[in-house]
Image (cartoon, rainbow, N blue to C red):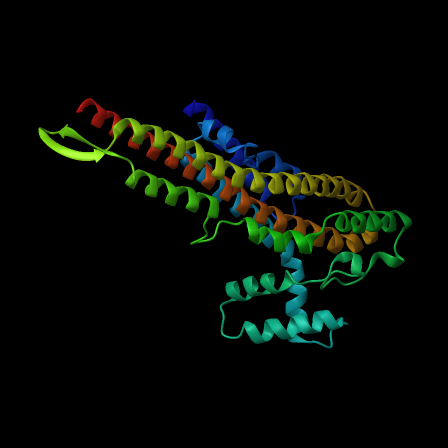
Length: 332
């Protein structure tokens, strides 16, 4: 099994390397989707999966790196135009939104390194208007004066973009990202009740290491631990199922967008130079938006696998408590 997992990881790394390859290579969103970690539909299935946590962590880390690298590649020509506009605002005709963006970046990036300036620019660009608004940020021209084939692809791009609610997705993602200090109220209540019930169990004297000690009735404690374990996993499993349902719905929608974009890449590359150049900014803009969404979805994937780990730890803790009271029982 370990050799199989290593092969699986090697396959992912090769795909990730292809995804973040040199600038001239076409972006294949389907390649990334094929290598994504796919969580199981239930916590029970996840806990039964024997993929090691080390492999999971490496896969997720490489997914983040692959997406981030590809976004950087796609943003490069956009950032170059931004820098030209910053150096000479009169050189390019800027929309009001672009002018606001340029001012925000100039103000916020003062004193930063070039790398940090670029990252700040990327952060600001998450607020850009959709391509369906008429023109993506920092592109030279619209495809309005180009061929009918270019116009058809442009309309298809707008339809793909409109088929996914990007704003709601990014807002809702925060609900499913594991946050420090976040709690499951049902789990907390279940844990408190267990502690109270354990404290109130009738006591028995047992021999431990040659000494008589008074502890909770082992038989009743074992039954309580089993009940607590079942209730705990049920509450945690319900929370997992809610998160997974949302994750799966978004994955299916983003897969549709990704496959549609990959198909349009082939169509765009078949056009004559002028039409192809006029469509590239629109295509790249939606590719970036999709990659940004896949990055966020991978954060939720990470949360689901973290839930798996927590579920396994909880199960082990209950087992250890039962084992402990089983030993106490032998000393009655």
